[in-house]
Length: 367
Ligand code: UT7
Image (tube, rainbow, N blue to C red; front, side, top):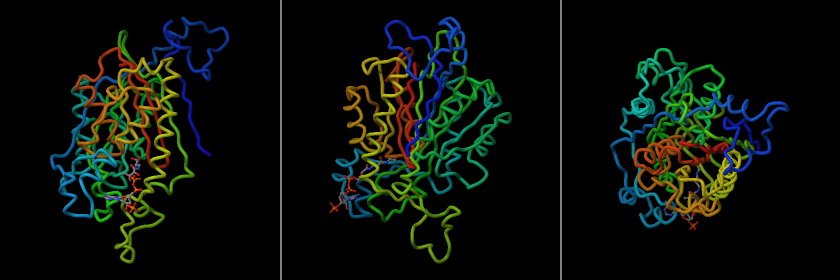
């Protein structure tokens, strides 16, 4: 059975123009609005973003020379024109480090003051230790707790919610969250159904407690449906099906996907997750300045924008440049949208993602 998690809001007292908070949230009897405002000390803001993509560009035209495909098919079915491919000696941790340093610089946070690093990835440098440990060493964040999470394309928002709760609860004062992937190392380059979709890159954000006058994360929604693991996975290379001399030719350690099924679930789950956070934040669709969705397929993005009644010009898209970079996709898009001025301080934005698991998540943020 699908499971959705509701985790309490940090915004308790809606201004008059907003809808009431989500019905699941109830102020305890005897607690009035002033108390609730005081509790918003635990509000968490995004203080900086950063991203990095490798130099090498792989265009649709180049793929036409390698496999039976066409720029026309890829463009009309996905919206992707090109993707970035990491060098052989460029690992997930290297990309994560570069994106992370850019986010720290924008947040004016010194690496030695970082208290938590979470890397969301399905393409870690090594099965153990975590890629976050390499990042900690690379940036010199000696005080930071560092670990990875695996939630596929939803990983960056899962990391955001974990970091938000650890900051709000007082465990740490700040967090560097990173979505980073070297998917090119886990793609079967002979499978035209998948290899045209994916690319490499990393995106990052710095979270800390919100100061007076700053925006904050208004609401989040996370969900998982483990009955659908077969729709999108990397079947081999784990303890269930290790790669051996006997199965080495079967491409078991590469991405396998039932695209049409995934497509259908992606639209439904992202639509409902986005609606959930918009409602929990006390907003209406017209209050949203920018929607930043997972960058997997332009047709999925258009379908969600349509169902949410958000005009296309408010929906940030960069998948034509990078393809699907899984956990990195929404993080890179957030950074590019932020740096390009797609939204400004005080604007409400919505991030929404979907991936293997199946997993999905959304965040409503006042910037
Ligand atoms: O990040 C996690 C979430 N992932 C997603 O959201 C991905 C969701 N799925 C999709 O984006 C789409 O399903 C795909 C882009 C993967 C595929 O698009 P589709 O419209 O579902 O195509 P299809 O797989 O049904 O294939 C249609 C036809 C088939 O040929 P026939 O059987 O109709 O003769 C395929 O063999 O297109 C063929 N085809 C290709 N043709 C040219 C499949 N891949 C290619 C290709 N080039 N690269």
